[in-house]
Amino acid sequence: MSSISELWTKSKETFAEKTVAQILSFTGDGKLRDNNQTSAEFRELLDQVPSLLLKQFAENCLSEKFTDSGLALQDVINQIGIRLGFTVAYGRYRGNQNDIAYDGIWTSGGEHSLVVEVKTTDAYRINLDTISGYRTRLFEKGLISKEGSSILVVVGRQDTGDLEAQIRGSTHAWDIRLLSTDSLLKLLSLKETLNDTKTIRQINELLKPKEYTRIDKLIDLIFLTTKDLQLDEPEESEVEEIIKLKKKKLTEPKFTPVNFHEGCLDKIQDKFSINFIKQSRISYTNKDKTVALICAISKAHEQGKNKKFWFAFHPHQVQFLKEYPEAYVAYGCGSPEDTFLIPFKNFEPLVNQMWTTENEDRMYWHVVIHNREKKFLLQQPKNEKSRLLEITKYKL
Image (cartoon, rainbow, N blue to C red):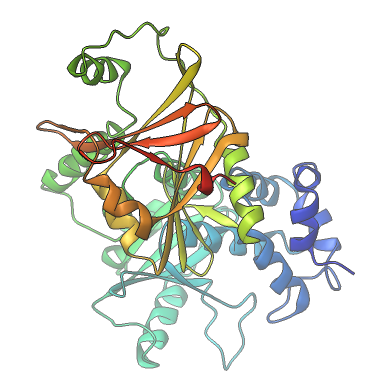
């Protein structure tokens, strides 16, 4: 019998119509228990599904009362932690005298650790002493440091007034952060909108308990996030500026957004037989963080009988790709049918031969690909020997 992750690979549309309870029924005995087949298969599936499906699973766990709904939500929340860039150690579903009953440990950059507690509701008072005790025992076992750790309580609903008051009035107020599942999902959505993965690391600092009498750091964070969101593909006016330098006129219609990322990504995943997880707006890695990918798309700009495709390549993308032992850049030219996958080690030397735009806010390279007589050519305007490099061999 196929595992649910194999079923996901074969029929992704089916999962959008299934509840979490139905999905669990496809595995093992259908019950989430520590270290059993059902938990292993469910977590393997969570490693592969897109964030929109994670949101659907979370909402399902909160709205539908089924056996193990709280345990399934615990796994979904831990998966969101993974997507946010934390190193996550799954906790136990049920505690006992010998094991510490934490729900998860999220570690950021090998430094600060969050001891995570997941609650489907705040209708009942939480024993904060018990949760603090988990943190103390983890410290005593050497799994976390006392100074470099705190507690994160994730609850199912937005209305957390009673729990907030309970935390504020306790001796644990300086060690605990509280947020709803919905807010955590919004944070993940923001991450996948950003361009530079380093920005989300600073946003994740909000999950640590801090005293905000002075709000300079919050203002800095808002400024940083706004600046990151502006690092989008440059406007059409910037294309005009470059073309004017070549004494050509732009006769194409006003830029209209295109979106066939998923089609390009599917072709790349088929080639590698692996699943890529979105890290930012156009960056991806595999689960084991051994392969990295930048995947950008462009509509066709008509030039008589020929076509041109235009992309931006940013310094933060260079830094991202350099962090992984195997890395690629991918460019979708007009449709998934013309997707080009180039090893970063081959692409990086070509960057210095491209046009650049530099101003106070950003710097980036112009990646221009021409389609001429069934050949695809990468523009190298600074290379006096060969201003066009054929890249047809990289087409998937």
